[in-house]
Structures are given as structure tokens and as C-alpha cells.
Length: 208
Image (cartoon, rainbow, N blue to C red):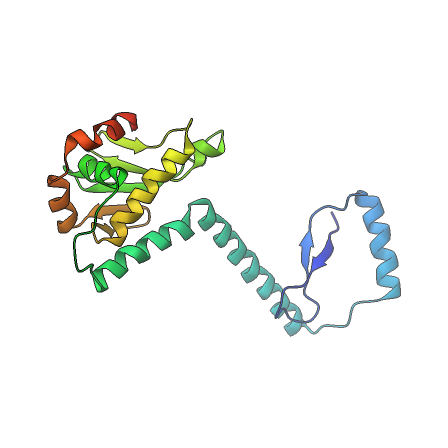
């Protein structure tokens, strides 16, 4: 099917266009439109070198778009921000022990055995609340706790904010991709959490 240009990215070489795959009037109408356009305004002659440069640029641009889109689908911007907070706490650690919210303490209590925490969404979730990024804690290798509530996405967000507190205060270290781990300070703090204060939060989380 013939295609028609809709935009020209900044910095693109002469004669390069971004194409869209379909014209609303269909193939025949699109073909006639381009025949008229080319007759009135023929494209400038391009050498094989220029043509190759345009194709290379198009391929690189398409690959960058695909990689960026895939990264967004994994929650990369948020994960990068969380990793940055963890790194900042290493370089410039807090001078004193900061108070933590109930959600942050509940995450520490849940992770006190393994220290393993994961931040992820469910891309195949049916509703936005199902796809929402949430905190997952591995209590054992086979058991995890998901701090999410599909009926109350605000609470899921509160728990994520609790995790952000842990990143800021040096309680958590970023490992790989979406994996985080308690630091020594995190393990020490987890051992002091009053379970009676966080039990309601732990009960509300999804165990599996």
C-alpha cells in the first residue's frame, strides 16, 4: 500500500519523511492523490548516497521509537527515578533517622526475611488499576505480598509512596531493572518495626 508523509523530524536529511500506513479514503484514492502531487511537485533528485543516508536515518529513528515505547511499557521512567533516589542516598546519606509512614514500615516488615522488593505493573491487566505500578515483596522464594488494591488504587499509590520514602532514606538499594533490595540500614530498621502498627496494612495486601 502506498503511504503518505505526515511529518518531518527535526534534523532529518533532505527528502526524508515519517510515513503513516493508511489513508482514510483507501488505496485507490491515495494512489490518485500521490499521482497528482508528484506531477505538480516532483521530488528532488537524490544521489544513491543521499538515499542510503535517508534510509539509515529512518531505520535508526524507527528503532529509537520502538525502544522508547517498549521502555515506557515497562515503567522505565518511574524505575529510573526510584533508582536515582537510591543512588542519591548512597552518595549523600541522611544525617538522621527519618520517621516513616505506616506503609513504608509495612513494606520493611514484609521484607525483613529476604530483603527482596520488586516494583512492577501488570501489562495484561484489564483495568488501569490492574496495570498500576505497585510494590511486591518476596517473603520467601515462593511467597510474595503485593501492596495493591484494585478496588482502591489510591491505596496502591500510598504504598508506592511508602516505598519512595525507603528509597530517599537509604533503606533500599536498586539492584537490576525492577528489583530492589534492603540495605543494612533497611534490615536494621525492619527489625524494629512494631508489627501491631502495620498488621492492618499487611492484611490488606494481596498474599500469594
